Amino acid sequence: MGKFQTIRVGEAELIALQDSWTTRGPGGFFEGVEADAWEPYAEWLDEDGLMAHNFGCFLIRSQGKNMLVDTGLGQWPNPLDLHQPPSLPGVMQEAGIPVGEVDLVLFTHLHWDHTGWNTRGEEGALELTFPNARYIVQQKEFDYWTGPGDKPTNGPDYERVLAPIIAADRLELVNDEYAATREVVAVPTPGHTPGHVSFAVVSAGERAYVLGDAAHKPVQLTEPDWYPGFDLDPVESTKSRHMILNRAEQENALLAGGHFAFPSMGYPTQVDGRRSFRYVT
Image (cartoon, rainbow, N blue to C red; front, side, top):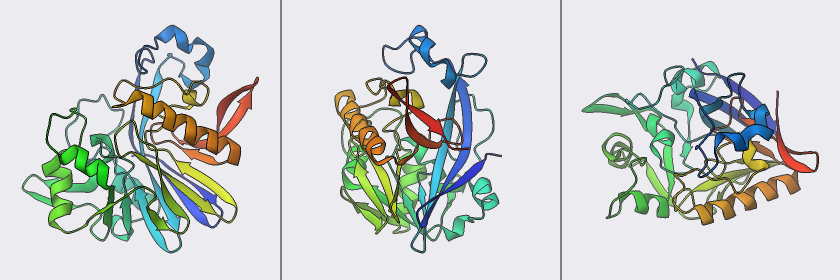
């Protein structure tokens, strides 16, 4: 079973939810960045020199709504060497948020590891995991993955995770700075995918940013030009990362990264004159 952790952001609540996790060597995760480049950043590796890779989602409670950001891996077969089976619905139940109480599912983007728990059940008899929710997707993100032409293999499985929410009339397509509540607003951070967004939580003078894949690892606060090879537009993704991380540092905002090692949340900080990351505990 995965873990969860809760932190308040003003009058809102942000809950990190771990679906699953794995480890891998750091060399090559970022394009052109080999293992020796990580030597100054050993703090982000485990005792075996491996990088923890979390598959996490976030639940935002704001102004009477329960909003889930991304839906993780799901029950479907995948090529990953996971340290535990994906368990998002069970973790949510343990955190006091039954799947039936989710009002909105907000997607940062539609990669398969962010859309997996849209549905569950048997092939041919799928049910929506979050039966009372509306599923909110950026129009340009949806158009890219469902439009003509060849696509990368890390996109959503249409029949398993998109077709059922469309058939149930639960899909809502939005544009740019969509406001889920007055406290929760999408921030366009394109590049990783064309319609990628992060989410700003602004409440009672406090701020947080749920990053999605605008940043994958805390080391990118120090090395924001490092990017993974699966960014569709590395120039644009790097521009977006600089923007959102600079904004968070200026605002002393909480950062929540679904692929950051659990507990996934922390603050920009300065270490020896360079920006770094401090986990909340």
